[in-house]
Image (cartoon, rainbow, N blue to C red; front, side, top):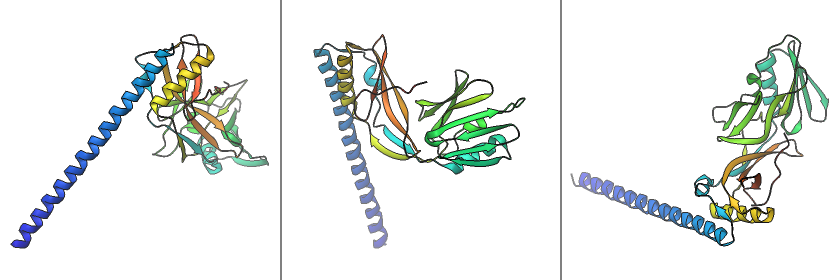
Length: 257
């Protein structure tokens, strides 16, 4: 009987400790969030003093801790994608990291850096989604139809530089991610740092107003043949969009379409 009472007291004590720790953690996180919001407001005030106006909606659109991601080239995933679309096909490796798959209805060529080219045979009506649809239940990549072709998103953000569209004749080509697993890299600047960096970029470019921002990822093909996505912000000046690397706060080049 005494042991039963002691066990009940011990459980109550542990419960009280867990509640205390939970409240303490919540209080700390809440204080950090309030402090961060104050820093963002202070950053906007600094820009205003420098003659740069920041729209009210901009702070709400600022991302929280986005990271870069790298996909190691997966030739087996490419082969499986070719099989999904073409069915039985012949594989050819001419060298230089090039893999070609020939089937009765067309041919697919994969190159380093995510480059893919599809040639349909006359009369073929291939469902390109079977080739491009990201695989894996945990994949954070999603496919979207856009401008007569296909675009790629990561965590709901557009991936600039990743897309497949139709060329001359029955040819489709572009850059895509076929691997399913990525490696996490560097984290973006704090939201206050992003505001200040955006202000410097606007000032350097001769603009005085930040009307809005859009978070995107920039696809970069690495010399290794792998693919890296960099978080970036598109800064709306009212007359053009400036692109800023969210890891460094420096200007970034938009991928060519």
